[in-house]
Length: 189
Ligand code: GRF
Image (cartoon, rainbow, N blue to C red; front, side):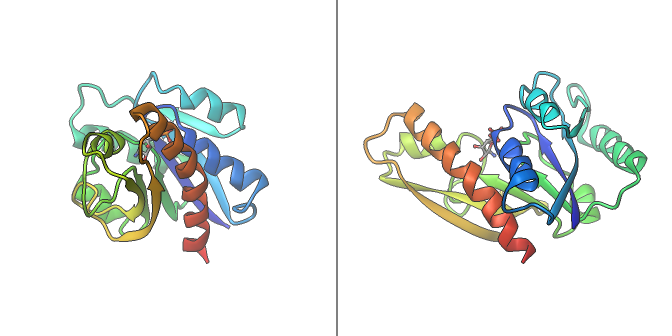
């Protein structure tokens, strides 16, 4: 069993889906999600995660520098006194500093709602929609010091031809929720 944590900022559909797989599905007896951290007090995902009996921490980042905020995260992790093998970013809306990334080198992964080689940054589905793409991708990648620039672990193609933006988001998220745990599983193997 490896110890992992998840960092979120929002609704946490990927986080809840990964947690469910660790409890009842493909990640059972493989990953122990020790706790989930949100940097956003209003992250609705936290309630759903608590219902799954996972420990949660809210460590607000508002008005803090990256360094100040990460110091609090590292303090929290130290207090939990568990060696963390994998940090899963799931809709975590902060860029991690090179210092943090280097502390957990090759142990931080992220899911991005586009092909990171074609589009980095926020609102990947909107980018695909605005560019009238027939298909787009979801990317799971390692986190390095840049923005969405880490080594790609896997990509999944989604057909979005003739869909509205809302339909693209709905379809994409549903696929992400399955794809992310699957790729984490492959990574462990
Ligand atoms: C997902 O679209 C993910 O690809 C992106 O942020 C969104 C998070 O969604 N990085 P959720 O909070 O997991 O529902």
